[in-house]
Length: 154
Image (cartoon, rainbow, N blue to C red; front, top):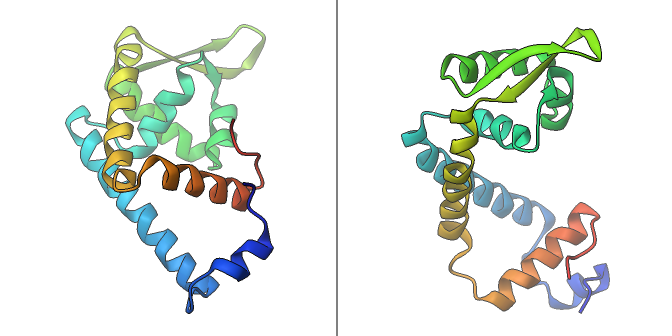
């Protein structure tokens, strides 16, 4: 069944005002972030650094591309990459196609970290969403897809 706005009116419990939904959504996000931070702590990474590492899993990227994909200012990416470089997880190198640009790529240590990062994310998500059975998770995914304007996955 595909979610439609009319369904919200017919099945929303009394008191499910948009502000209450926003508050619950914000609390869920706090729980996810807190769980992820706890799971990443043994790896010595912040959530933002982990996002950069995951972005680089598919190959080197320009600093500006990383900033765009993270929706942050380029200066923030410089600080993140500095920390990752100090930890030996990424290296910077000149872009052979544009001498003014810098590419960032994972080192072998950074590549080995990908599986551990994925496990940390799964652990955090399981803590939050594990109380839902498969049907309710599918329903939630469909609702979130509707809110994000994306199609549900098959």
